[in-house]
Image (cartoon, rainbow, N blue to C red; front, side, top):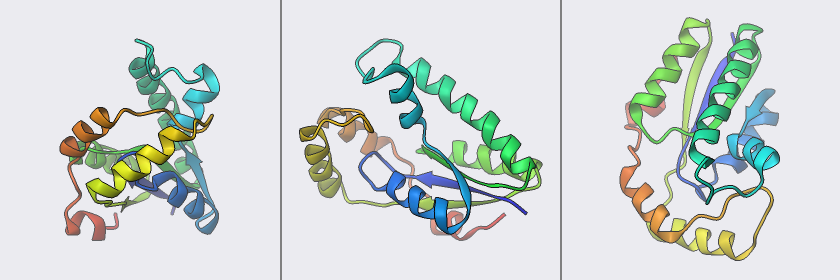
Length: 155
């Protein structure tokens, strides 16, 4: 049975680093939207189309992920999954395909996230977007942290 791994956390929490590790440990297909978006559109975070493009890429990646799960290939979705409702939706999608699911949450304190963000923004990269401190602070407030029972649940 294939497993869908949901990477949960804010930017700079280490989601992609952990996803890359799990990719090898679990023989999984890793799908990271930012890599696709930057590859297709460059550093477009300030462009009006950014959010629509991101949503479209996530939908396309789900199409790839669902086919991989049907083929009994493990999949890592490195989407962030800030809302519990979104996590539950993807877990149900996996279940409908006959796959199990796991949530991997990187809970990093606010001060550490802001420290990492400052470092990230000071070193422009073709692998990640520049994020303002104001945006990060609002996202910290928005994040719905998974409860322990959600993290322990294997479906």
